[in-house]
Image 1 (cartoon, rainbow, N blue to C red):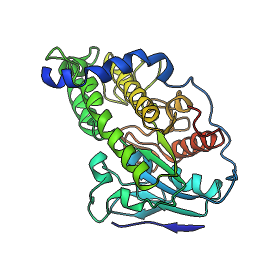
Image 2: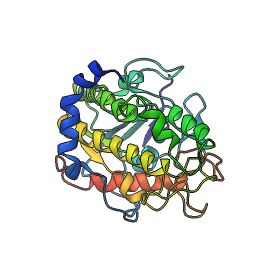
Image 3: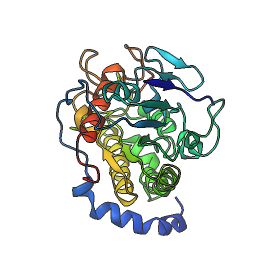
Image 4: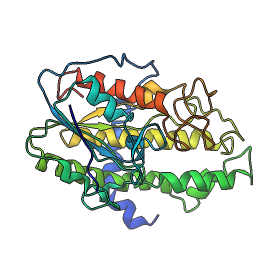
Amino acid sequence: MNHHTRPGGDFPRRRRTMALGAALSSCALVAGVGAASGPASAGERHSPRPVDYVALGDSYTSGPLIPRQVDAGCARSDHNYPSLVAARYQVASFTDVSCSGAKTDEMGKAQGTNGPQLDALKRDTDLVTLQIGGNDMGFGPIIGTCAALSSKDPSGDPCRQYYTSSGVDRLALNILETAPKVARVLRAVHARAPHARVLVVGYPALLPDDGSGCYPSVPFAAKDFPYLRDTGKRLNRMLRLVAWLNRAEFVDAYGPSVGHDMCKAPADRWVEPLRPTAPAAPAHPNAKGMETTASAVLERLGKRAGHR
């Protein structure tokens, strides 16, 4: 197998996204995250024929701080889920250009020494995984803002109040505005790799699915936990819908990770809290989390292409 790493709330906006908002609401039952379940077997899987696989994405793909780091500029691990999929699916060639901090813009332009991620695609590329959108909707700043606000009202919902103070949920709006950006990326993927099977990978459960909290271990106010949980689910619903509308398949990383969020004990969690105890970036999957996402991708690959 050839491993190759390339260097590199205003109301007019609400009207522009109204149609997509209605579509997301109408498909919530169909596009909701999967039920909680354990990870599928991550054992070796054989592809029906040799495939050329390209992985695109942000830090939830690249695996910052997970050993062994193979690209310091992008904080990319050789034990991230694309690397595990490549080994177990026995691909003919594998190119991983995922990069920490990537937004949809970085699919088409350089990010530091990492070239435009779309440049890794060729007409003979057979398989593409894409995990993107979290940074576009402001994932990092949201965590920082909500953590800072929590001390003002630990038992309340200061974060939700902040993001809805204008009468519009700005996080929900951010997600709606990210949708067409992800759609443009998918159209570009199909244009460059017209025969590829394309999988859009969702994001795992960062917080307890039951809405409970664990302040101060995870420093969000008690009533902000369900608000932020719902925001994560909304992001995944958007990604599922955009994938469906753009001839791609969706991989649910949320369902299998329920019960293994930042609030769980170190032995049970697959996402590290803001002060990690395992090698991983804060609020990011650890090695166990990458194993689970790899299993979800492999399970999707084992299903008929085109079945959503």
